[in-house]
Amino acid sequence: MGIEDIEIGEDFDFEQMLNESFENSENNSVVDGVIVEITDDSVLVDVGQKIEGKLYLSEITVNGEVKYKAGDILPVIITGVRGERPSISHRKVLQKAKFDDFIKLHGENVEDITIEGKITSVKKRGGFIVEDEEGCEYFMPMAQSYLKPIGAIGKKIKAKVLKVNEAQSSIIVSRKKLIEDGKAEKDTKVAEILEKNEPVNGVIKKITSYGMFVDIGGIDGLVNYNEISYKGPVNPANYYDEGDEVSVTVLSYDKTKQHLSLSIKAALPNPWEEIRDELDVGDTITVTVSNFESYGAFVDLGNDIEGLLHVSEISWNKNLKNPKDVLVLGSEINVEVVELDVDKRRLRVSLKSLQEKPFAKFVKENKVGDIVNGKVATITDFGAFITIGDVDGLLHNEETSWENNTKCKTLYKKGDEIEAKIIKIDREKENISLSVKEISESPAQKFQAEHKMGDIIKGTIKDLKDFGLFIKISDNLDGLVRKEDFGPLEEADMKAGDEIEAVLVNIDTKRNRIRLSIKRLEAQKNREILDSVNDTSSMTLGDILKDQIK
Image 1 (cartoon, rainbow, N blue to C red):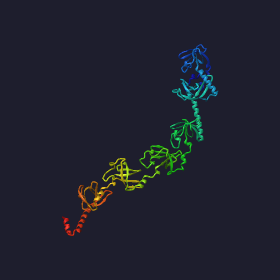
Image 2 (cartoon, rainbow, N blue to C red):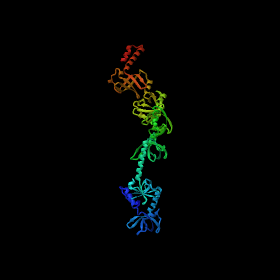
Image 3 (spheres, rainbow, N blue to C red):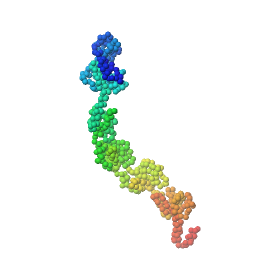
Image 4 (cartoon, one colour):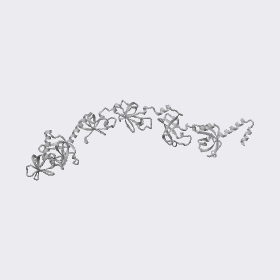
Protein backbone atom coordinates (compact mmCIF):
# COMPACT_ATOMS: atom_id res chain seq x y z
CA MET A 1 0.00 0.00 0.00
CA GLY A 2 1.44 3.39 -1.05
CA ILE A 3 0.45 7.03 -0.78
CA GLU A 4 -2.01 6.92 -3.68
CA ASP A 5 -3.73 3.88 -2.17
CA ILE A 6 -4.77 5.74 0.98
CA GLU A 7 -8.48 6.63 0.88
CA ILE A 8 -10.17 8.49 3.74
CA GLY A 9 -13.13 10.77 4.25
CA GLU A 10 -13.53 14.07 6.08
CA ASP A 11 -14.33 12.26 9.33
CA PHE A 12 -11.69 9.63 10.00
CA ASP A 13 -9.52 8.12 12.70
CA PHE A 14 -6.12 9.28 11.51
CA GLU A 15 -4.12 6.93 13.79
CA GLN A 16 -6.20 3.96 12.67
CA MET A 17 -5.67 4.87 9.00
CA LEU A 18 -1.90 4.94 9.48
CA ASN A 19 -1.81 1.63 11.29
CA GLU A 20 -3.86 -0.07 8.61
CA SER A 21 -1.59 1.39 5.96
CA PHE A 22 1.51 0.11 7.71
CA GLU A 23 0.05 -3.39 8.30
CA ASN A 24 -0.38 -3.94 4.56
CA SER A 25 3.28 -3.49 3.80
CA GLU A 26 4.26 -7.15 3.33
CA ASN A 27 3.60 -7.02 -0.42
CA ASN A 28 5.57 -3.81 -0.92
CA SER A 29 8.70 -5.57 -2.20
CA VAL A 30 11.04 -4.42 -4.96
CA VAL A 31 11.82 -6.96 -7.75
CA ASP A 32 13.51 -6.76 -11.14
CA GLY A 33 10.95 -7.47 -13.85
CA VAL A 34 11.38 -7.95 -17.56
CA ILE A 35 9.34 -5.86 -20.01
CA VAL A 36 7.33 -8.25 -22.14
CA GLU A 37 5.28 -5.83 -24.23
CA ILE A 38 4.77 -2.09 -24.64
CA THR A 39 1.41 -0.89 -26.02
CA ASP A 40 0.01 2.58 -26.68
CA ASP A 41 -1.04 3.07 -23.07
CA SER A 42 0.41 0.29 -20.92
CA VAL A 43 3.43 -1.89 -20.18
CA LEU A 44 3.36 -5.68 -19.37
CA VAL A 45 6.14 -6.77 -17.04
CA ASP A 46 7.11 -10.35 -16.08
CA VAL A 47 7.67 -10.45 -12.32
CA GLY A 48 7.92 -14.23 -11.99
CA GLN A 49 4.26 -14.89 -11.36
CA LYS A 50 1.57 -16.67 -13.44
CA ILE A 51 0.48 -13.45 -15.13
CA GLU A 52 2.49 -10.38 -16.02
CA GLY A 53 2.01 -7.25 -14.01
CA LYS A 54 0.63 -4.20 -15.79
CA LEU A 55 1.54 -0.55 -15.37
CA TYR A 56 0.70 2.68 -17.23
CA LEU A 57 2.99 3.76 -20.07
CA SER A 58 3.36 7.14 -18.35
CA GLU A 59 5.48 5.49 -15.62
CA ILE A 60 8.36 4.93 -18.06
CA THR A 61 7.81 8.11 -20.11
CA VAL A 62 9.87 11.27 -19.44
CA ASN A 63 9.11 14.47 -21.36
CA GLY A 64 7.11 12.45 -23.91
CA GLU A 65 9.89 9.90 -24.55
CA VAL A 66 9.60 6.19 -23.59
CA LYS A 67 12.82 5.30 -21.73
CA TYR A 68 12.57 1.49 -22.01
CA LYS A 69 11.88 -1.18 -24.67
CA ALA A 70 10.68 -4.80 -24.65
CA GLY A 71 13.26 -7.08 -23.03
CA ASP A 72 14.70 -4.42 -20.72
CA ILE A 73 14.91 -5.12 -17.01
CA LEU A 74 12.67 -2.75 -15.02
CA PRO A 75 12.65 -2.52 -11.20
CA VAL A 76 9.11 -2.47 -9.84
CA ILE A 77 7.32 -2.73 -6.51
CA ILE A 78 4.65 -5.41 -6.07
CA THR A 79 1.92 -3.81 -3.95
CA GLY A 80 -0.62 -6.59 -4.09
CA VAL A 81 -2.95 -8.48 -6.45
CA ARG A 82 -5.92 -7.22 -8.47
CA GLY A 83 -7.89 -10.21 -9.64
CA GLU A 84 -5.20 -12.61 -10.75
CA ARG A 85 -2.78 -9.98 -12.06
CA PRO A 86 -0.13 -8.65 -9.64
CA SER A 87 -0.29 -4.88 -8.89
CA ILE A 88 3.05 -3.33 -9.74
CA SER A 89 4.55 0.17 -9.94
CA HIS A 90 7.81 1.49 -11.32
CA ARG A 91 7.06 5.04 -10.17
CA LYS A 92 7.00 3.83 -6.57
CA VAL A 93 10.52 2.49 -6.98
CA LEU A 94 11.60 5.98 -7.98
CA GLN A 95 9.62 7.46 -5.09
CA LYS A 96 11.24 5.03 -2.67
CA ALA A 97 14.64 6.37 -3.74
CA LYS A 98 13.38 9.91 -3.02
CA PHE A 99 12.00 8.68 0.31
CA ASP A 100 15.37 7.13 1.21
CA ASP A 101 17.08 10.45 0.40
CA PHE A 102 14.58 12.22 2.68
CA ILE A 103 15.31 9.84 5.58
CA LYS A 104 19.04 10.09 4.98
CA LEU A 105 18.82 13.91 5.05
CA HIS A 106 16.63 14.27 8.13
CA GLY A 107 17.45 11.12 10.12
CA GLU A 108 15.00 9.29 12.35
CA ASN A 109 13.31 12.33 13.98
CA VAL A 110 11.45 13.58 10.95
CA GLU A 111 8.14 14.54 12.57
CA ASP A 112 7.37 18.30 12.67
CA ILE A 113 9.76 18.93 9.77
CA THR A 114 8.25 21.57 7.44
CA ILE A 115 8.15 20.70 3.75
CA GLU A 116 7.25 22.90 0.78
CA GLY A 117 5.77 21.54 -2.41
CA LYS A 118 3.09 21.75 -5.07
CA ILE A 119 -0.19 19.80 -5.13
CA THR A 120 -0.01 17.47 -8.14
CA SER A 121 -3.26 15.51 -7.77
CA VAL A 122 -6.38 15.13 -5.67
CA LYS A 123 -7.53 11.68 -4.59
CA LYS A 124 -11.24 11.06 -5.07
CA ARG A 125 -11.48 10.07 -1.46
CA GLY A 126 -8.93 11.13 1.06
CA GLY A 127 -6.70 14.04 0.23
CA PHE A 128 -3.90 15.49 -1.87
CA ILE A 129 -0.59 14.33 -3.35
CA VAL A 130 2.14 16.95 -2.76
CA GLU A 131 5.48 16.89 -4.57
CA ASP A 132 8.52 18.96 -3.59
CA GLU A 133 11.23 20.32 -5.91
CA GLU A 134 13.30 17.12 -5.48
CA GLY A 135 10.42 14.97 -6.69
CA CYS A 136 9.63 13.44 -3.30
CA GLU A 137 5.90 12.83 -2.79
CA TYR A 138 3.84 13.35 0.35
CA PHE A 139 0.23 12.57 1.21
CA MET A 140 -1.90 15.26 2.87
CA PRO A 141 -5.30 14.03 4.16
CA MET A 142 -8.21 16.32 3.31
CA ALA A 143 -8.95 17.05 6.98
CA GLN A 144 -5.32 18.12 7.48
CA SER A 145 -5.26 20.49 4.51
CA TYR A 146 -7.48 23.54 5.26
CA LEU A 147 -8.09 23.43 1.47
CA LYS A 148 -10.92 22.65 -0.92
CA PRO A 149 -10.27 20.20 -3.78
CA ILE A 150 -11.52 22.61 -6.45
CA GLY A 151 -8.63 24.71 -7.72
CA ALA A 152 -6.08 23.00 -5.47
CA ILE A 153 -3.94 21.37 -8.17
CA GLY A 154 -0.86 23.46 -8.86
CA LYS A 155 -1.09 25.36 -5.58
CA LYS A 156 2.17 25.73 -3.64
CA ILE A 157 1.86 24.93 0.05
CA LYS A 158 3.87 24.37 3.21
CA ALA A 159 3.06 21.54 5.61
CA LYS A 160 4.46 19.66 8.61
CA VAL A 161 5.37 15.94 8.57
CA LEU A 162 3.06 13.89 10.81
CA LYS A 163 4.05 10.27 10.24
CA VAL A 164 6.67 8.31 8.27
CA ASN A 165 6.71 4.56 7.53
CA GLU A 166 9.97 3.34 6.09
CA ALA A 167 8.51 -0.06 5.16
CA GLN A 168 5.92 1.65 2.95
CA SER A 169 8.12 4.61 1.98
CA SER A 170 5.15 6.83 2.84
CA ILE A 171 5.15 10.32 4.39
CA ILE A 172 1.97 11.90 5.80
CA VAL A 173 1.94 15.74 6.08
CA SER A 174 -0.44 18.32 7.53
CA ARG A 175 -0.95 21.92 6.50
CA LYS A 176 -3.46 22.29 9.32
CA LYS A 177 -0.82 21.50 11.96
CA LEU A 178 1.60 24.01 10.42
CA ILE A 179 -1.03 26.75 10.49
CA GLU A 180 -2.25 25.98 14.00
CA ASP A 181 1.29 25.68 15.37
CA GLY A 182 2.12 28.98 13.68
CA LYS A 183 -0.90 30.64 15.28
CA ALA A 184 0.01 29.32 18.70
CA GLU A 185 3.59 30.47 18.29
CA LYS A 186 2.43 33.89 17.11
CA ASP A 187 0.02 34.21 20.06
CA THR A 188 2.83 33.40 22.47
CA LYS A 189 5.32 35.84 20.93
CA VAL A 190 2.79 38.67 20.75
CA ALA A 191 1.77 38.03 24.37
CA GLU A 192 5.42 38.35 25.41
CA ILE A 193 5.81 41.63 23.47
CA LEU A 194 2.59 43.05 24.96
CA GLU A 195 3.68 42.06 28.45
CA LYS A 196 7.01 43.91 28.07
CA ASN A 197 5.17 46.93 26.60
CA GLU A 198 8.33 48.18 24.89
CA PRO A 199 9.16 49.08 21.27
CA VAL A 200 10.69 46.25 19.23
CA ASN A 201 12.80 46.25 16.10
CA GLY A 202 11.45 44.86 12.86
CA VAL A 203 12.21 44.70 9.13
CA ILE A 204 9.93 46.11 6.45
CA LYS A 205 8.88 43.20 4.21
CA LYS A 206 6.33 44.89 1.93
CA ILE A 207 5.17 48.45 1.23
CA THR A 208 1.63 49.15 0.00
CA SER A 209 -0.45 52.27 -0.56
CA TYR A 210 -2.24 51.76 2.76
CA GLY A 211 0.77 50.90 4.92
CA MET A 212 3.72 48.54 5.48
CA PHE A 213 4.11 44.94 6.61
CA VAL A 214 6.86 44.60 9.19
CA ASP A 215 8.47 41.33 10.36
CA ILE A 216 9.16 41.29 14.11
CA GLY A 217 10.90 38.03 14.92
CA GLY A 218 9.08 35.94 12.34
CA ILE A 219 5.70 37.59 12.92
CA ASP A 220 4.22 39.94 10.35
CA GLY A 221 2.28 43.01 11.46
CA LEU A 222 0.73 45.95 9.61
CA VAL A 223 1.76 49.56 10.13
CA ASN A 224 -1.16 51.55 8.75
CA TYR A 225 -0.28 54.75 6.84
CA ASN A 226 -1.87 56.71 9.72
CA GLU A 227 0.67 55.21 12.13
CA ILE A 228 3.86 56.18 10.32
CA SER A 229 4.14 59.87 11.18
CA TYR A 230 2.57 62.36 13.57
CA LYS A 231 1.84 64.48 10.49
CA GLY A 232 -1.14 62.24 9.75
CA PRO A 233 -1.75 59.91 6.77
CA VAL A 234 1.39 59.74 4.61
CA ASN A 235 2.63 57.70 1.64
CA PRO A 236 4.95 55.07 3.20
CA ALA A 237 7.01 54.82 -0.01
CA ASN A 238 8.13 58.44 0.57
CA TYR A 239 9.67 57.50 3.92
CA TYR A 240 10.93 53.90 3.75
CA ASP A 241 12.21 51.11 1.49
CA GLU A 242 11.63 47.38 1.77
CA GLY A 243 14.36 45.87 3.95
CA ASP A 244 14.66 48.95 6.20
CA GLU A 245 14.83 48.29 9.92
CA VAL A 246 12.30 50.19 12.02
CA SER A 247 11.27 50.38 15.66
CA VAL A 248 7.56 49.65 16.24
CA THR A 249 5.03 49.39 19.05
CA VAL A 250 2.21 46.82 19.16
CA LEU A 251 -1.15 48.62 19.12
CA SER A 252 -3.51 45.62 19.10
CA TYR A 253 -3.72 41.93 18.30
CA ASP A 254 -6.81 40.03 17.08
CA LYS A 255 -6.25 36.34 17.91
CA THR A 256 -9.20 35.19 15.84
CA LYS A 257 -8.11 36.99 12.69
CA GLN A 258 -4.40 36.80 13.56
CA HIS A 259 -4.23 40.51 12.77
CA LEU A 260 -1.32 42.37 14.38
CA SER A 261 -1.44 46.19 14.28
CA LEU A 262 1.83 48.07 14.71
CA SER A 263 2.82 51.72 14.97
CA ILE A 264 6.06 53.49 14.15
CA LYS A 265 5.03 56.89 15.49
CA ALA A 266 3.96 55.39 18.84
CA ALA A 267 7.55 54.16 19.30
CA LEU A 268 8.83 57.73 18.87
CA PRO A 269 8.64 60.70 21.27
CA ASN A 270 5.37 62.60 20.84
CA PRO A 271 6.30 65.97 19.28
CA TRP A 272 2.92 67.42 20.25
CA GLU A 273 3.80 67.01 23.92
CA GLU A 274 7.15 68.66 23.26
CA ILE A 275 5.47 71.85 21.99
CA ARG A 276 2.77 71.95 24.70
CA ASP A 277 4.77 74.41 26.82
CA GLU A 278 6.91 75.86 24.03
CA LEU A 279 4.30 77.21 21.59
CA ASP A 280 1.26 79.40 22.09
CA VAL A 281 -1.36 81.26 20.07
CA GLY A 282 0.10 84.50 18.76
CA ASP A 283 3.65 83.17 18.39
CA THR A 284 5.47 83.73 15.10
CA ILE A 285 7.26 80.63 13.77
CA THR A 286 9.25 79.69 10.65
CA VAL A 287 7.78 76.74 8.73
CA THR A 288 8.23 74.94 5.41
CA VAL A 289 5.44 74.61 2.83
CA SER A 290 5.04 70.81 2.62
CA ASN A 291 1.81 70.10 0.74
CA PHE A 292 -1.00 71.74 -1.21
CA GLU A 293 -4.72 71.08 -1.03
CA SER A 294 -7.64 72.86 -2.72
CA TYR A 295 -8.56 74.47 0.62
CA GLY A 296 -5.07 75.64 1.56
CA ALA A 297 -1.54 74.44 2.31
CA PHE A 298 0.13 72.33 4.98
CA VAL A 299 3.28 73.63 6.62
CA ASP A 300 5.95 71.57 8.41
CA LEU A 301 7.38 72.73 11.73
CA GLY A 302 10.37 70.43 11.21
CA ASN A 303 9.55 68.04 14.09
CA ASP A 304 7.00 65.74 12.44
CA ILE A 305 4.17 68.22 13.06
CA GLU A 306 2.18 69.86 10.28
CA GLY A 307 -0.13 72.83 10.57
CA LEU A 308 -2.92 73.99 8.28
CA LEU A 309 -2.56 77.30 6.47
CA HIS A 310 -6.10 77.81 5.16
CA VAL A 311 -6.49 79.67 1.88
CA SER A 312 -8.39 82.41 3.75
CA GLU A 313 -5.32 82.96 5.97
CA ILE A 314 -2.78 83.25 3.15
CA SER A 315 -3.59 86.74 1.88
CA TRP A 316 -5.89 89.68 2.52
CA ASN A 317 -6.85 89.39 -1.14
CA LYS A 318 -10.35 87.88 -1.06
CA ASN A 319 -10.05 86.78 -4.68
CA LEU A 320 -7.22 84.31 -3.95
CA LYS A 321 -8.54 80.80 -4.71
CA ASN A 322 -5.44 78.64 -5.20
CA PRO A 323 -2.57 78.62 -2.64
CA LYS A 324 -0.14 77.69 -5.43
CA ASP A 325 -0.60 81.20 -6.85
CA VAL A 326 1.41 82.74 -4.01
CA LEU A 327 3.27 79.86 -2.29
CA VAL A 328 6.09 77.55 -3.44
CA LEU A 329 6.44 73.95 -2.25
CA GLY A 330 9.49 73.60 -0.01
CA SER A 331 9.86 77.32 0.66
CA GLU A 332 10.26 78.71 4.18
CA ILE A 333 7.74 81.30 5.41
CA ASN A 334 6.96 83.06 8.68
CA VAL A 335 3.46 82.49 10.04
CA GLU A 336 1.49 83.29 13.19
CA VAL A 337 -0.11 80.57 15.33
CA VAL A 338 -3.86 81.27 15.38
CA GLU A 339 -5.09 77.96 16.87
CA LEU A 340 -3.29 75.27 18.90
CA ASP A 341 -4.96 72.21 20.46
CA VAL A 342 -2.30 69.73 21.58
CA ASP A 343 -4.81 67.13 22.81
CA LYS A 344 -6.60 67.08 19.44
CA ARG A 345 -3.31 67.51 17.56
CA ARG A 346 -4.61 70.50 15.66
CA LEU A 347 -2.55 73.49 14.57
CA ARG A 348 -3.72 76.38 12.39
CA VAL A 349 -1.48 79.23 11.26
CA SER A 350 -1.88 82.50 9.38
CA LEU A 351 0.36 84.27 6.89
CA LYS A 352 -1.81 87.33 6.30
CA SER A 353 -1.88 88.27 10.00
CA LEU A 354 1.82 89.16 9.72
CA GLN A 355 1.11 91.44 6.76
CA GLU A 356 -0.22 95.01 6.94
CA LYS A 357 -3.99 95.10 6.72
CA PRO A 358 -5.05 96.43 3.30
CA PHE A 359 -7.58 98.82 4.85
CA ALA A 360 -4.93 100.37 7.11
CA LYS A 361 -2.62 100.77 4.12
CA PHE A 362 -5.44 102.30 2.05
CA VAL A 363 -6.27 104.84 4.76
CA LYS A 364 -2.60 105.85 4.93
CA GLU A 365 -2.47 106.50 1.19
CA ASN A 366 -5.97 107.90 0.52
CA LYS A 367 -8.47 110.38 1.99
CA VAL A 368 -12.04 111.55 1.42
CA GLY A 369 -12.24 113.49 -1.83
CA ASP A 370 -9.52 111.54 -3.64
CA ILE A 371 -10.23 110.11 -7.09
CA VAL A 372 -9.35 106.41 -7.39
CA ASN A 373 -9.46 103.74 -10.12
CA GLY A 374 -10.90 100.28 -9.58
CA LYS A 375 -12.63 97.28 -11.10
CA VAL A 376 -16.21 96.15 -10.62
CA ALA A 377 -16.01 93.01 -8.43
CA THR A 378 -19.65 92.34 -7.55
CA ILE A 379 -22.97 93.85 -8.64
CA THR A 380 -25.99 93.79 -6.30
CA ASP A 381 -29.51 95.23 -6.28
CA PHE A 382 -28.35 98.18 -4.16
CA GLY A 383 -25.10 98.96 -5.97
CA ALA A 384 -21.69 97.53 -6.81
CA PHE A 385 -18.47 96.66 -4.95
CA ILE A 386 -15.38 98.14 -6.57
CA THR A 387 -11.96 96.58 -5.94
CA ILE A 388 -9.25 99.20 -5.38
CA GLY A 389 -5.95 97.39 -4.90
CA ASP A 390 -6.60 94.96 -2.02
CA VAL A 391 -9.76 96.61 -0.65
CA ASP A 392 -13.35 96.93 -1.82
CA GLY A 393 -15.44 100.09 -1.83
CA LEU A 394 -19.21 100.40 -2.20
CA LEU A 395 -20.69 102.36 -5.06
CA HIS A 396 -24.35 102.79 -4.13
CA ASN A 397 -26.96 103.13 -6.87
CA GLU A 398 -27.63 106.72 -5.74
CA GLU A 399 -23.96 107.59 -6.36
CA THR A 400 -23.78 106.38 -9.96
CA SER A 401 -25.46 109.30 -11.75
CA TRP A 402 -27.21 112.59 -11.12
CA GLU A 403 -30.16 111.13 -13.00
CA ASN A 404 -32.80 109.69 -10.71
CA ASN A 405 -33.41 105.89 -10.40
CA THR A 406 -30.16 104.90 -12.12
CA LYS A 407 -28.81 101.47 -11.07
CA CYS A 408 -25.35 99.93 -11.27
CA LYS A 409 -26.65 96.78 -12.88
CA THR A 410 -27.77 98.78 -15.93
CA LEU A 411 -24.47 100.68 -16.25
CA TYR A 412 -21.73 98.17 -15.42
CA LYS A 413 -20.68 94.54 -15.66
CA LYS A 414 -18.16 92.59 -13.61
CA GLY A 415 -14.58 93.49 -14.52
CA ASP A 416 -15.36 96.99 -15.82
CA GLU A 417 -12.75 99.58 -14.90
CA ILE A 418 -14.21 102.78 -13.43
CA GLU A 419 -13.07 106.05 -11.87
CA ALA A 420 -14.73 107.10 -8.60
CA LYS A 421 -14.45 109.59 -5.78
CA ILE A 422 -14.01 108.62 -2.13
CA ILE A 423 -16.92 110.22 -0.27
CA LYS A 424 -16.67 108.42 3.09
CA ILE A 425 -14.22 106.25 5.06
CA ASP A 426 -15.60 104.44 8.13
CA ARG A 427 -12.50 103.45 10.11
CA GLU A 428 -14.44 101.52 12.74
CA LYS A 429 -16.38 99.33 10.31
CA GLU A 430 -13.60 99.49 7.69
CA ASN A 431 -16.05 100.57 5.00
CA ILE A 432 -15.30 102.77 2.00
CA SER A 433 -18.04 104.66 0.14
CA LEU A 434 -17.52 105.75 -3.46
CA SER A 435 -19.28 108.05 -5.91
CA VAL A 436 -19.09 108.36 -9.65
CA LYS A 437 -21.58 111.18 -10.02
CA GLU A 438 -19.56 113.54 -7.78
CA ILE A 439 -16.72 113.52 -10.29
CA SER A 440 -18.95 115.47 -12.69
CA GLU A 441 -20.77 118.79 -12.09
CA SER A 442 -24.22 118.35 -10.60
CA PRO A 443 -27.34 119.99 -12.09
CA ALA A 444 -27.60 122.00 -8.85
CA GLN A 445 -24.10 123.38 -9.42
CA LYS A 446 -25.02 124.46 -12.93
CA PHE A 447 -28.20 126.02 -11.58
CA GLN A 448 -26.24 127.85 -8.87
CA ALA A 449 -23.99 129.41 -11.51
CA GLU A 450 -27.04 130.96 -13.17
CA HIS A 451 -29.14 131.96 -10.15
CA LYS A 452 -28.89 133.59 -6.73
CA MET A 453 -30.89 133.44 -3.54
CA GLY A 454 -34.16 135.35 -3.79
CA ASP A 455 -34.65 134.75 -7.51
CA ILE A 456 -38.21 134.02 -8.52
CA ILE A 457 -38.31 130.59 -10.18
CA LYS A 458 -41.05 129.42 -12.46
CA GLY A 459 -41.84 125.74 -12.87
CA THR A 460 -44.50 123.07 -13.16
CA ILE A 461 -45.91 121.14 -10.19
CA LYS A 462 -44.48 117.60 -10.56
CA ASP A 463 -45.78 115.85 -7.49
CA LEU A 464 -47.65 116.59 -4.25
CA LYS A 465 -46.63 114.89 -0.99
CA ASP A 466 -47.82 115.09 2.60
CA PHE A 467 -44.82 117.26 3.46
CA GLY A 468 -45.02 119.55 0.41
CA LEU A 469 -44.74 119.63 -3.35
CA PHE A 470 -42.04 119.20 -6.00
CA ILE A 471 -41.63 121.69 -8.81
CA LYS A 472 -39.88 120.55 -11.98
CA ILE A 473 -37.15 123.05 -12.80
CA SER A 474 -35.27 121.03 -15.47
CA ASP A 475 -34.92 117.39 -16.60
CA ASN A 476 -32.44 116.57 -13.80
CA LEU A 477 -33.45 119.08 -11.14
CA ASP A 478 -36.53 119.47 -8.95
CA GLY A 479 -37.34 122.14 -6.39
CA LEU A 480 -39.07 121.34 -3.09
CA VAL A 481 -41.65 123.62 -1.45
CA ARG A 482 -42.49 122.45 2.06
CA LYS A 483 -46.03 122.89 3.44
CA GLU A 484 -44.99 125.63 5.82
CA ASP A 485 -43.77 127.58 2.76
CA PHE A 486 -47.08 127.36 0.84
CA GLY A 487 -48.20 130.82 2.05
CA PRO A 488 -51.66 132.02 0.95
CA LEU A 489 -52.12 129.16 -1.55
CA GLU A 490 -54.37 126.33 -0.47
CA GLU A 491 -53.35 122.73 -1.15
CA ALA A 492 -56.74 122.07 -2.69
CA ASP A 493 -56.05 124.73 -5.30
CA MET A 494 -52.85 122.99 -6.50
CA LYS A 495 -52.52 119.99 -8.77
CA ALA A 496 -49.78 118.35 -10.86
CA GLY A 497 -49.09 120.13 -14.11
CA ASP A 498 -49.99 123.64 -12.83
CA GLU A 499 -47.46 126.35 -13.45
CA ILE A 500 -46.30 128.11 -10.35
CA GLU A 501 -43.82 130.70 -9.08
CA ALA A 502 -41.67 130.47 -5.95
CA VAL A 503 -38.64 132.15 -4.43
CA LEU A 504 -35.25 130.41 -4.39
CA VAL A 505 -34.21 130.01 -0.72
CA ASN A 506 -31.50 127.28 -0.75
CA ILE A 507 -29.24 125.37 -3.15
CA ASP A 508 -27.64 122.07 -1.95
CA THR A 509 -25.09 121.27 -4.68
CA LYS A 510 -23.86 118.11 -2.93
CA ARG A 511 -27.29 116.54 -2.69
CA ASN A 512 -28.51 118.17 -5.89
CA ARG A 513 -31.48 119.75 -4.11
CA ILE A 514 -33.25 123.12 -4.45
CA ARG A 515 -35.50 124.66 -1.79
CA LEU A 516 -38.25 127.08 -2.86
CA SER A 517 -40.86 129.13 -0.98
CA ILE A 518 -44.27 130.41 -2.20
CA LYS A 519 -44.86 132.11 1.14
CA ARG A 520 -41.82 134.37 0.68
CA LEU A 521 -42.99 135.27 -2.83
CA GLU A 522 -45.60 137.76 -1.52
CA ALA A 523 -43.20 139.27 1.02
CA GLN A 524 -40.56 139.68 -1.63
CA LYS A 525 -43.02 141.41 -3.98
CA ASN A 526 -43.98 143.77 -1.18
CA ARG A 527 -40.29 144.58 -0.57
CA GLU A 528 -39.87 145.32 -4.24
CA ILE A 529 -42.77 147.78 -4.01
CA LEU A 530 -41.18 149.49 -1.01
CA ASP A 531 -37.84 149.62 -2.76
CA SER A 532 -39.52 151.27 -5.71
CA VAL A 533 -41.06 153.90 -3.40
CA ASN A 534 -37.71 154.69 -1.86
CA ASP A 535 -35.98 154.93 -5.20
CA THR A 536 -38.69 156.97 -7.09
CA SER A 537 -39.01 160.48 -5.60
CA SER A 538 -41.34 161.80 -8.31
CA MET A 539 -44.08 159.34 -7.42
CA THR A 540 -46.18 159.20 -4.32
CA LEU A 541 -47.03 156.08 -2.39
CA GLY A 542 -50.61 156.41 -3.52
CA ASP A 543 -49.51 156.36 -7.17
CA ILE A 544 -47.51 153.24 -6.70
CA LEU A 545 -50.35 151.47 -4.87
CA LYS A 546 -52.77 152.65 -7.49
CA ASP A 547 -50.64 151.06 -10.21
CA GLN A 548 -50.39 147.83 -8.23
CA ILE A 549 -54.18 147.74 -7.77
CA LYS A 550 -54.58 148.03 -11.50
